[in-house]
Structures are given as C-alpha cells and as structure tokens.
Length: 165
Image 1: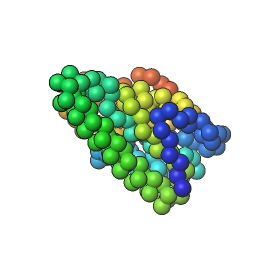
Image 2 (image 1 turned 135 degrees about the vertical axis):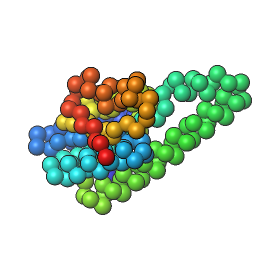
Image 3 (image 1 turned 90 degrees about the vertical axis):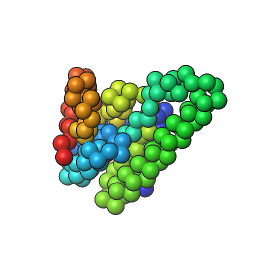
C-alpha cells in the first residue's frame, strides 16, 4: 500500500538513495497537473524511483480573507474552505494512490498548506528530490504575473520540468 504523509511528517526515510531517484510532482486536480502526475509516474517507473505527489491547500491569506467577514459568516466561510480543501485532498490522495498501486510505484502523498512554490520546494528538499514536476499553468493571469514553473526555477533546489500537454 502506498505511503501517506502529512504536512508535519518528514519525508526523508527511503528517499534520495543512490540509484533511486525521487520525483516531486505538484497536483491540484487540474488537467495540466494530472498530465504532470502521469509524466512523473512514467519517469519514476522507468527509473525505478519514488513519486511524491504534493497537494497544497490555501494559504493563510485565503483563510485571513474569510476572517474579515462578520464573525458568524467568517467562521462558516473558514469551515467551508477547510472542508472543501480536505475533501479535495482526500479525493486526490485516493486517486493518485490507486494509480500508483495499480502501476507498482513507490509513492507518497503530501497535503501541505501555504504558498505552492515554497511548499513544493520544502517537500523536495525534505525528500531529497532529484526532480520537481508541475503542469503548465492554463490561467491567463500567470502569463503576466508569473507561473508556478517560473517561480520554482528561480530557486534551483532541484531541476524543474514543466509538462506542457
């Protein structure tokens, strides 16, 4: 059965050993993130490595926005945000774990919170990743403000692959 990890658990056990590459892949349920996930799984299978799939929930800024509403509304909004995020994380975990098990992959799912680029880099460092994989952003605002792939390439913690469908 695939391993599951949470934000607070270290990922170093069994990762980054010579000859056993570790690929960290960001997944958010979008079509492009699934393309990145499938590419990472294929590469991991070819290299006999390990996949670490990372879902990053909303930042504290999103939670803070919910708290600016009147107390009752903010409490409900925060609850809805957390419930939706947890449901999405559970669904992604189940789907990715099933795929990994069906294909005999070494696999870990991580549900993190915060800035997506920073969390992917944090997990990659903790897992001693050889590669970080993300899907190409389909959002127009990212072409102006900068995409996740561009933000990741500035940090050079590991090589970055941006999968373009």
